[in-house]
Length: 152
Image 1 (spheres, rainbow, N blue to C red):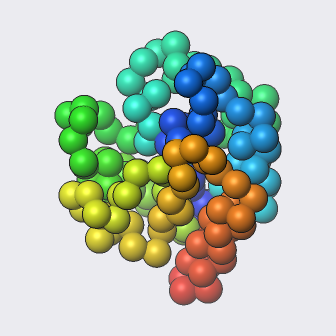
Image 2 (cartoon, rainbow, N blue to C red):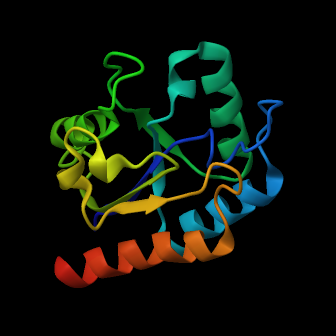
């Protein structure tokens, strides 16, 4: 039995304020997605680059009983290559973790970044001002359901 993975961005998804504070309401939506799908998290956010911010995210998710199983490789900053990082992580770790479905939740237009075509059908885009809403959380759950239907 495989697992579901959420590639998680933070700014514009869980943090939509200028204070750099994780928002409880958005964490609650993420928690409902993780519980509904049994998903584990891989950090694709730039927060993974700074130890203090990474610890803050991991601690917040651990409080919700959401397991963080890694982070995407860190390529050059400020380049439109997050899809490449996600696909590289999948290539290196997908079979090890028996990933059967995955979704990237991000406020960036990843489908139009380098490697973005590989995220087709796996992307939920948030608005940077409102972040992860219940409607978008439900979309993330649907991505998981469609993948399960495709690959029983």
